[in-house]
Amino acid sequence: MALRRKRDEAPRRRVAIVFGGPSREHGVSFLSAKCLLDNLPKESYEAVPVFVGKDGIWCGPEDSGAEMRRQLMRPSRDLLLDGVKPGSRPANGPRIVGSFLKAYEEAKPDVVFPMVHGTWGEDGVVQGLLEAMGIPYVGFGVAASAVGMDKAFMKAAYGAAGLPQTRYQVVPREDWRRAGRRELVLARVENMSLPLFVKPACAGSSVGITKVKDHAELPAAVDVALAVDARALVEEGIDGREIECSVLEGEEGGATEASLPGEIIPGHEFYDYEDKYIDDKSRSVIPAGLPPEVASEIRSLAVAAFDVLGGAGFARVDFFLERGSGRVLLNEINSLPGFTPISMFPKMWEATGLELPDLLDRLVRSAFQRSIRGR
Image (cartoon, rainbow, N blue to C red; front, side, top):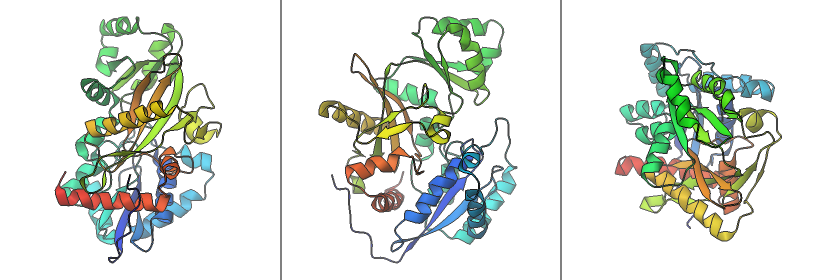
């Protein structure tokens, strides 16, 4: 596997690191963006910050740098909990577009590296804006981002491709609220084995997830999920280990590549937002202690999950390894994984032999690679 490549000796390219945004993971993106700004190889790239406010307004590099310095002075817990609340609305379209054009003129990037986790950054919104402007960017395109962010569409795509998954049901908000329809929804999940996990169809970093141990708890759990998104997903729980695998787009038309898998050992009953970012009780094992044939299966499935969606740039794919049966089940794909101090994506590539600066260099080059051959 060709992991390293000599960096271009051409003049430095200017990379706009976009972070913030109207997302519940607003605060997390500051840490990811800081990592990119600090670790992009300075001999090849000039990295500049571009902040997007909770209202969707874009800022130029000078104001963005000041906002990053201000926010990073806050206690880590406060920053990580500082996300957009459900029901918040961004500014009107003309203001957003006007601010984007002004920020773009100030930043003058050759390429954009989005680090807006969750809404806008992972659902295709930012990607659509960049596509319309003809600006190269790192990561999934519009359609792949939208499908990867929407767990209902994602699972439908993986099911059509024959990839192994847990059983699930989609609960639209209109069905849940309409007289007589709620009972039909509850009837569909009665034969699903407990525990159940209820989550919003479109949300990242385990936001809005409830573990249901009794069917009587299901209505409240669905209400929590539907407060975040218009559709909820009810999934059958698996008694298994949580395994993750990092994926990279192949270089120069080559095959998609997968890292050595890693394992998450939750500190809570399951790996939720607080366990991931706040309480610091979970731990990771990289590489995961797996038989070679199981690790190989996981890597192959991670590549398949990436390719089925038409993935580009990079992603992290999450699995369950069921205890007893040994089944490997695909959980979900994350098309914009984090680069925080606890993020698995860069750690798994480091364990595979690709150091962080080389990883970031490869990701930036992938954006130019796609801009040449089209999306």
